[in-house]
Image (cartoon, rainbow, N blue to C red):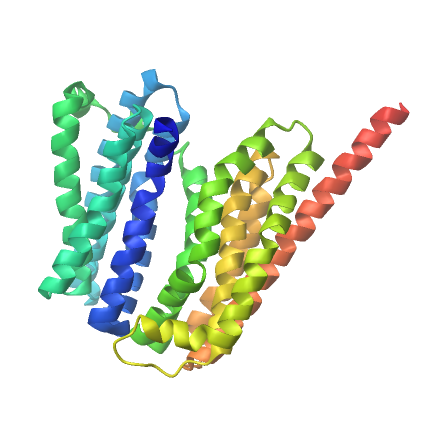
Length: 397
């Protein structure tokens, strides 16, 4: 029972963030909430770039190599953040660009927190891991209610969390910082980590780009409707996926045959189909009433828009989980290519679309997301059939 509670505590922070965002939506409005979603999207992308995924490297490597991975990750984040900030200052001076330094700094502290959380998780400090994952949400709520701007609220939330993380890490595992300043840039292996980082970046961009697109083209309110609609209506499915996915991915990993891996994954989504269908029913008939519960001021949004956003949220969950499957069958390049094409379609909308209506943008996003999802499913079926054909050939031989 204690082990089960310890494992479940890994997901505590998601529930806390969920509640905090709904409180902010209720008391500070849809525009403030939309700006928070936009800032979170931008800084998430920055965090992937400056961390070069050293936080993942800590988790997948042995405990004896975790210290080296942490130190390289720490130096990488400082080096790349400094370089990006320098280029940002040049852009301000030469081209009179807007100052995005707060967003860059936020990405740096998000990446730093991810790095330290991975270190605690690797060492089995699950409760500390959960605490540090939850702290940004607590600071976010306090600072937002105190009247800080969304950008500054997000930045300070992760600055304060990083300070707490550093103090705890220094007291519990001080030797992890020993020799960190002697690491040479040449030994960071940034060239080797470029393509894995780009693959992760493409995947991350596919999920957060729509928030950025809506904010730029349709405003903070549109971004807030999008982010909170997914947060409210997709939460039952999201919590189920988070709870069950480790077991499914473990089962996928244990299967040696490609066809069995794909069959297990698609069977999982067939198992989830009743939850999806029930949510669709609720969104169609009660979506507007449910959304209004969390708003201080009612906003006129058609239930069909909520339904489309829910569908995109389901597709995002499907694609997120499918990354483990494609990695397991050594087809990550196929996934990256499909998502990259989808992203290019999104950039086309950003640059050339003259639409400013929320409904028009969401319809286009649904079409792009559905096309990418359908392509991935067709790809899975193709790889499934190839594996079956190979097995039949081996049997015949």
